[in-house]
Image 1: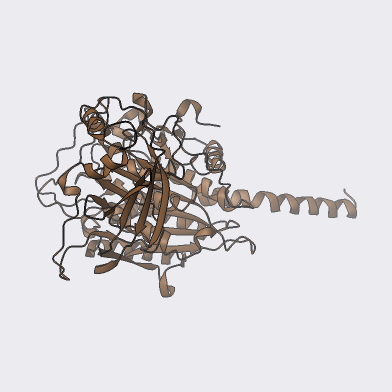
Image 2 (image 1 turned 45 degrees about the vertical axis):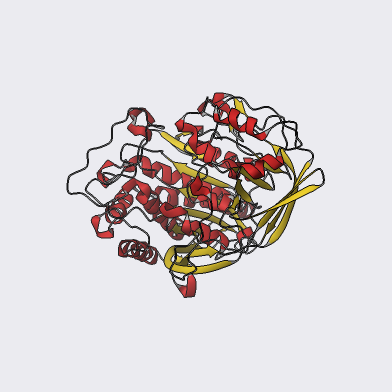
Length: 556
């Protein structure tokens, strides 16, 4: 029999061990509380005809958002919206830009100024009024595509310069690569850090058309983002502008244009003698306002020093609503799934139920909120956002990122869940596969935390990073809500199982969902979030950028 001192020591050791072990058991219990039965039950309503396809600005979307709020209330998840509610009002603005922006080109001391709509066409959302100047770098077609060994930026540094590109792509680019051509200005100013981007006027439709001056005219653009932010100038230009830019380069622009039209290789052209000045004089008039709403909830952290910082989970609850005719229009998915046959829709079905897109993410997020609210509490607070209007242009997430309900710099990371209930291209071999996008682009630490979380599972998933490849033609990194936060410099992970035969079709129904796999994915997302929310620091942001990684070299 131990002595009194021995008894005290034993009690102390047991208490210490319990203090260390109980949070782990509580965490695992919360993860295990995520069940396929709950997911099926909630999705059976979210993706039912009652919610009418959940299209933004419709009664169906209102029914869906209210249903989510009701579930949160049941689990005593704290409202984090406006005025003590679960809702954040999202304003979708229709805007006319009546500004008078100009661009001035100086070549060896000679200058010419071009007005917006007269030989040049600025993007409509130009951001705040300002002056942007820079040297000029010609980047050929302005395209980077490793699979075709095409690298227009190789040996060129456009950081702090204005990037100029011409043509519509080389011969090696098929129609499948057309998405890259359309993203050239965006890639120049984001990936390659140019201060501005100028491309050719490819069609007459790119030219500015005069309005009738009436209040009833159509807006130039629709947005949920702030209009007073700094945006790198992007514009298209006609032959007169381009000819002047190249006038002292030793190359005739007409000849370069002809080469580009023949899709030939373009020479390196030195434009050191050229300077460009953008005078952004935007003048915005809001001609239309429409309202929708995000659903927002919070579980407060347990650490007084960390509870004012956040892990942010997200999914979008909206979908496509009603089809204009039975079966509806379905997009081409042959690029990702060659030869896959679409499901034949029932003749009378006109509702896009969106069970996978993104009903699966919507109910996974409900399960996560329940797990955190009823289980162990992490040190950092957890914010849950069900975004509206993802299908219309990331409306809800862009609004939240620009008008956040918590300080945006207090968000450690954002985890986005969109389409996690199926197999990519309906391939049975994909039964254990989950696609990861963006985990390493801003934070290598975030990538490693997710890898560790997966390894901790009793039955780990196969994490595939091929959709994170910067050469991915589907551009998954930019096409869902996580990108609104990544654009603010917040580390993100996008969890998805990829496209399938019922993507954006009325046949995306509950009976096609693999709830067991979905449950495993939900538990991984929980385990990853738990690690982020218990770090003693904000996830490190080393900004190494995208790297092409696959299953074979996933762990780094």
